[in-house]
Length: 333
Image (cartoon, rainbow, N blue to C red; front, side, top):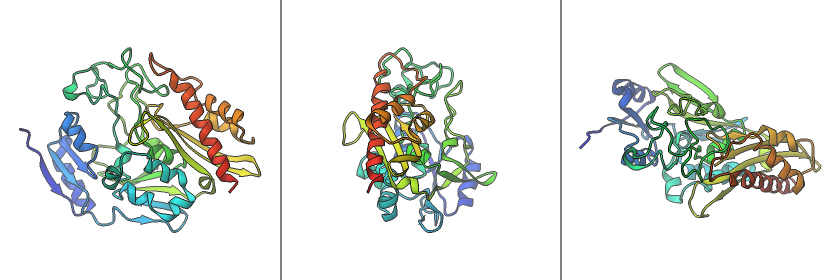
């Protein structure tokens, strides 16, 4: 039996202090929907849990001013239900509602969701029965040369091909959102896109925040481009599954011509993936099915499929094309 101690923090300061005292075996507890799973699987083995749920203000949602500000402890379901999110930021709402089940969305937080770890079956295999560089550095990667249907085709390395699992981070990357952080070195902010590390030679280091840092808020700039937007997700079953390929697309048009466009991808890359080549392929043009599909295919130039996931290149291109057609249709209403 492994003993785990528990600290219900009342303030950010007490949480940071508790983590400093716990050392490397401390973990912050937000909604707990991922952490408890990883503890059961033996991936995470904390000695101390520091509960953030009692800290006043961490779940505050603000929609006035020039930006949307979601406290990191706000439940995903609460953010999806905000009126301005429903009307002016459909890709945010859809990315939340297409993630997990209603029960999980009621518990999971918008800050914790950003730190969700991969669903790679080799990473999550019980008691580490398969080699995984992300779980045990230097042990190898069973997915490379193995069953890799769900693995990434973009941003991979010789050490890891695990897909970034989240939907919400993909939508935030498309809108150039940022996070606010409190940590041992004080407070700071960073773009959501910079939170995620490509695997390279150190796939065990997934995030660009330190072990004592706490994400305190998610901030989305208000922008007209988000009004004609969508989060389009293809998965093995519609009710509850991670993406085989997804696209967050937002466009602003002048007449029928695209003036501004944002495209980010999920389910196909090791990090939430901004598809700049696809954006350039459609910017300044009228969205037709042919052009949308060409933009989708541009996103996968340089992709590196494995043995069983080359279908993601064409599937992903069509997901982008479908999302562009949906966003273009919404731009006309």
